[in-house]
Image (tube, rainbow, N blue to C red; front, top):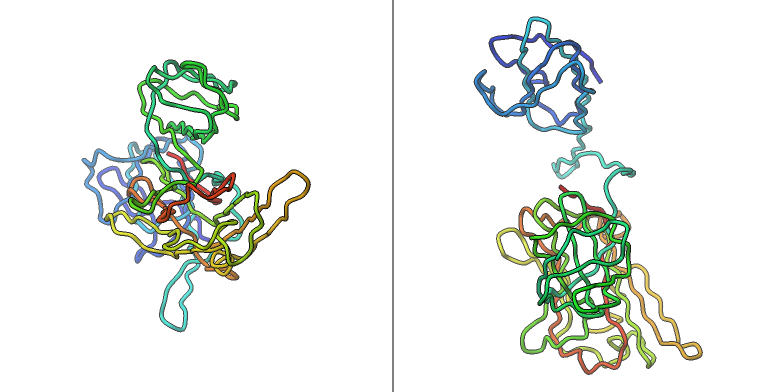
Length: 341
């Protein structure tokens, strides 16, 4: 780590990062008058109109990692800038691959625990939501029904909640809303139960971030409940599927990356790292839960990243008729971390 006082200039931008540039973390602190800061691979002109202003009254600008050169322009003779730069460790394998060091802890990225959903349609609010309430009013023609999952989002967050009551246009959900969501925006109403007919036209259940959102999926959990017992050879408690359910990623160019296809509980267990069968107790149901993990060296060593700005999605595709399966639930949930805004 090095800390230096930048040699600022009133007539031109000066580079304040190392040359040649290595991936680095930076802390920039202005001590008196304003300094203009620009991130650019090439030297910006003094007339450049896109910049960040950092004055003595501002807190230090903390940049966890940059691979782009940083430039500074003094606005007065009193402008002064301190630059603390620490190179991000780079590792080179015996195969010539280059990678950055991995930090085990992440204390700030928001957690994700979201369902794979089949989008059924959209609705709008009749009034802005109350963040302390479990109720909201939808515009007429909303088509929301009990059991639907509604998705509300804005620039600071989102929620997925199950509808537990519909009286006209008054909707009750199972969670306190937690934020103000505004009128004039189309929100999704969706279905999370995968007992659908995908034999003729495949039915897609998706993790689909909006523009401005992205997520790293660490694991997926499948849950099945049924009145009959189940084992490795069945799909839930039904016979193994003919075609199967496919997990895939929709890329930004519209193409797909198929991860795997499964037709039975056993085929899912083989790809997973934890599973559990619970036999029916009393008046209850038989249950099967399986988790497939991605990141971690004991698993696949990577996350599944989906970026809403790129139009990326993580999809589960139903390719068989599951409507006749006498089960009370087939559902999948993604677990990970996400970025909003």
